[in-house]
Image 1 (cartoon, rainbow, N blue to C red):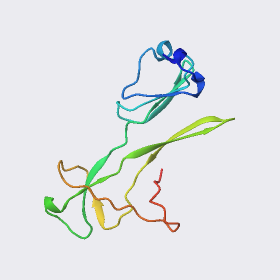
Image 2: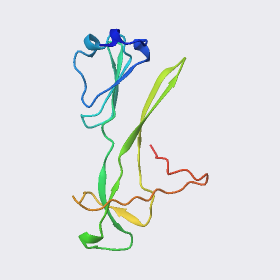
Image 3: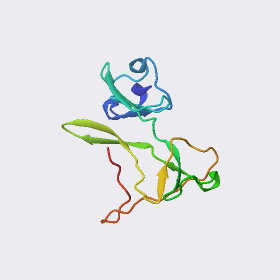
Length: 138
């Protein structure tokens, strides 16, 4: 597939839903394969290709208003405590890949250990002093 393209294979990143078996057979020279079907971040190098599983993006939990001991279910929306993946490329160092976990710093809510299916989601990123959205803690 790659040999028919007009680009250098080392500059191509293949993105798929699932990991492709026999990857080098189909994409010789490609340096990176991003996929996300299997749950859990993983960054490995195999036969010269970097395989990055970016799948653990969503991690919803139900939350309830702080100060309520036993809130009714109707007052329990969900919040996404998932992750995102940062991929940086520097000419000399190559790719730097890291998974960053999202945490809600909204003190108005308390996190439970479960997620209520069908409950609405709370969207309330905390604003940092420079005005950007909340950056995750590792």
